[in-house]
Amino acid sequence: MKDTFKHKGMRNQLAQIVADKGITDEKVLNGIRNIPRHLFMDSSFEAHAYQDKAFPIGADQTISQPYTVAFQTQLLEVTPGAKILEIGTGSGYQTAMLLELGAKVYSIERQKELFKKTSLFLPKLGYRAKKLIFGDGYKGLPTEAPFDGIVVTAGAPYVPKALLAQLKVGGKLVIPVGRKEQIMTLFVRTSEKEFSKQEFGEFRFVPMLENKN
Ligand code: SAH
Image (cartoon, rainbow, N blue to C red; front, top):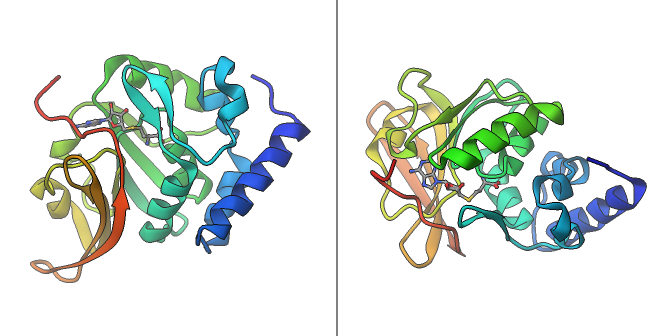
């Protein structure tokens, strides 16, 4: 597990690429500059780690494209101490980004091997989530609700009601909605019973799977 000046240099370039694509939140860009993405991937793919691309991480899953992680995180507007739920821990890269921003992070993963691997890996880098959970993200995490923000990092065929219900008033849900392609969607809970909705264009994610544990 080596992180060198060369890696750091490549991360600075990656942050510039992501900024050129429209990400303006300096804290998010700093996250990209700080997180050693190459360590989140198999070492044989190290050369690809600082391209702005998604990449396979085993078990048919992918580490999201840095731009996508930055885009979703920017929409969440995370403040230090915010309580954030992530659906789809995967490699843990998005989890690390949320921790870089000072969030209290809860993250759910349904794939057992990935869950185990990432649970061991993140603390080795000093990334300490409040809880990593093996389970089904469609249900959210009622025992820890309500949340300031919820980010779904798999393509959701529909918006799970449980996730909307677990937002604080003022809380945000960032979720890519759709089957083949997804529309990045931001819901804000404007009152106990009302939500605003905004859409932000097309993205592609691996599917959010249901009832397959
Ligand atoms: N945030 C991850 C993205 C991983 S890809 C990263 O930065 O690397 C999406 C992840 O969502 C996969 O690991 C997949 O197993 C997981 N997933 C799919 N459906 C899920 C569900 N219903 N509940 C929890 N996790 C789910």
